[in-house]
Image (cartoon, rainbow, N blue to C red; front, side, top):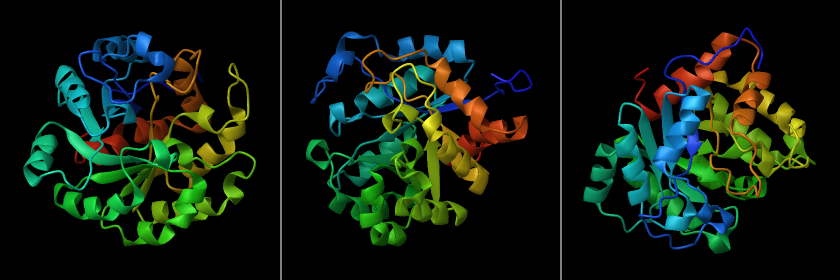
Length: 280
């Protein structure tokens, strides 16, 4: 980490998952099932990173049961945690209201592999209309090709969207992929955000790499819309068989920013606007 930069107070990890054996998984979590991925285990990571706030995202393993996420938020405290749920259009209004009180601020659509997803593309628009009253957003883990295919849908949405994991642009194409122009336009219009997270998902480098082949994309999002990006650790890194220290991914963020003011926006003020209703 550059010595002139430091982790500011109220810094937020805007993307992590909790896997707690007290809650039944519909789809078991690969090799990570045997690894402690509870809220208390994450608290140790959080202390090491000096990160005060966190956003817990329900993984697909729990289908639309968000109890594990709500429980983790309660353990951390509403002043320090928020969550993103997985839901289908049959969710009741009363459940949405309760989830809002419990700290949920968005709905995630993990559709990069639709055959394994608990939701579908035809559910996106109906749910967007339902959550607008709460000020929630849609978090989209889609491939770059899916973003292009559903550009019309994205244009119609009445709520903000958050593109997961750097927008999932393939490194072989990078910013030349047509999805990049769609994401950038929505960001410049303050209708979309990008999570600076999980560089390993599209990097072509090996396990011990610093994932430098995604640097251009990450720095581009920060440059074009510095108020529309947040950082996430993607802990516990379920797609990696031998995950490195989570600190590596915070170091990546340090390498992408130019100064402390930019770092403060990404770690503090931006997530405060997105998840805490602008409460810094």
